[in-house]
Image 1 (cartoon, rainbow, N blue to C red):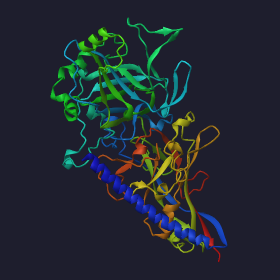
Image 2 (cartoon, rainbow, N blue to C red):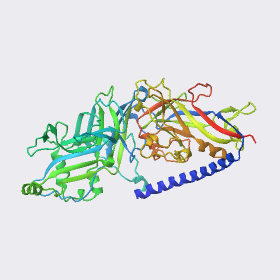
Image 3 (cartoon, rainbow, N blue to C red):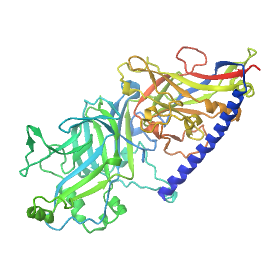
Image 4 (cartoon, rainbow, N blue to C red):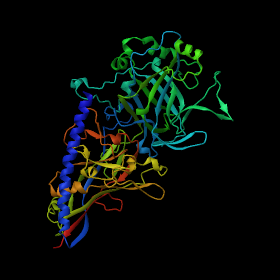
Length: 571
């Protein structure tokens, strides 16, 4: 049922995109025909007034305890993990935690009956990274695809057994719709945890771009060294990799052995290991919780977890394995005694945001922030403009009067970064490279997004750059200007009498992603006056920026601009 619901939704969205695209293609065809018949023309541009103001995704909350409304964060196309304190104080600190289900890849396991012993329980959750080089000893060098903050700063990592049941379908909809979980529900998920639920804790964890290396061991447990080089048996890409048989990195006693034996060995042949639903009701998942070492001055770094390549490996031995090893030391074909669990269902990000200032409604400056953050609402053609006779008239009326006189060549929105309000210590990675512009009535990017042929799936930061240009930076790599093209959107207004809908300017972590995140407690509608969903690409960005707004009474070089370029036939 869940897959059917998602498929129907996808078909609906694709259908809407197709209709919009076909309509827009017809417009362009008509315009191109007009241009071909024009022999003499004047090319010019005109600035039009508009309004832009900051809008929070959800009501302002001074601290996590007062955060009563969040944004949907389950089943995103990535998950944030860590701590990020923005160098610009007004954006405060974001702590990103995760609660996730985990399920075996097979059921009704046979762990053997005699001398069963747990050898390790490795939790492997890779970060998104890129292999840069490999040296002569086989050691790999990686760079993390997205990391932000101070990587030298450590924080506490705690891993709990969850007691909260994550559902796939919502019982309030008779199990017809997806169950939503939200960014502010960390307290709910953790409310019934006890000390016994804490599996592992590392008081000095930090996000590293180094690979994990498992050394080869001799029979006596010593590390194999050849020509002064440690021999590596297995390598793992950068990520969270901890042995949950231990309750902390220095636990030499493997204190969690009984815990894991009770989860698996004690339930061999029982219903809890017979089906996915039974197992998830018994072992409801894990909570990956991050805590700053210094709550007054929180520091750390933040990156993305790749759960699609994550697993939990329950490695054990039994009498059968020991007998085989004793009979033949060179056995290579024996099935490994490893029980594998994967993360392939509900994964929920929760955010704890502190020391954030409220800029909701600000028009002089536009405060854009990801996660459960803020955007700018835009209303084009708001205000008066001087017409051809020198009279001040409503700008939308003036624009519509040019329906049979203008051929639109291009229309742009340009926003300038307010460098004076951003901390000068910010680094290149602190500023978002891309913004996206949404039609808030249909909760989709404007039509110019869909007709942009520069789609790039391998390098999303370079995708759809005709629609939304990459942030222009100065010689110090500080952000200067964002530019959004809305040519087709404006043409539809002029040639097809399309509605002048309210628009939303958002930070985009990946412009190729157009899925949406619901606002808690609101139902989706086609009314652009209510913000009931936001792009999930913005929720997945921890970054923020401040832009100069549009002041109709003051024309400065950094004032935001809405400019239309057009040709006017002379013959």
